[in-house]
Image (tube, rainbow, N blue to C red; front, side, top):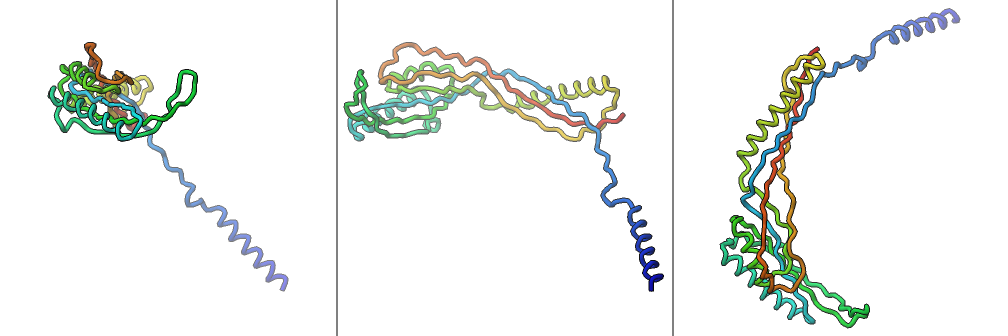
Length: 240
């Protein structure tokens, strides 16, 4: 009986030893591809040909009805002034209408009643920038007392985007060649390409507050220049 037990133990030990010598199924290492990533950039100057602006009317009265009525009269006058200067109906869009109640305060900080305030804001697309100054002046004279957030843009940037991508790719390729030469590697095929584009310029902040109906001063607006920024990221395979 003892000999059989010893024999079984010896066989088990041999089996375990053999299993321990086998390589693990997941131990084989996968060689990672060697790559070089570069980012090319191009900036294309653009002359704005369109603008977007928020034009609003703020009114206050002791009753909601009076505040809304006064606001409606001024807003309709502003719209009529803009339409009269060539702005299309489709380029006028209401973006805010709000009514709220506020306390009225005396100079010594004492509250002496409440007043209702009404705000109506119209988002205006201006397609003829040569008339922007006249449009803003007419809007103020008609009753607008909140004008802000002028944003200049280019209606069709497709050709500029094509040129920007071409220059950005050329920039990326030049960088890749330079880095390959410095490090002594050979560029292979392109693995991935991605790009991002956006235009930027400083916004203009105009009138705010006031009671409307004035604004006889000539409005001077400068459209300036936009920059279309294009970035291209290219990943190359490399060989030693």
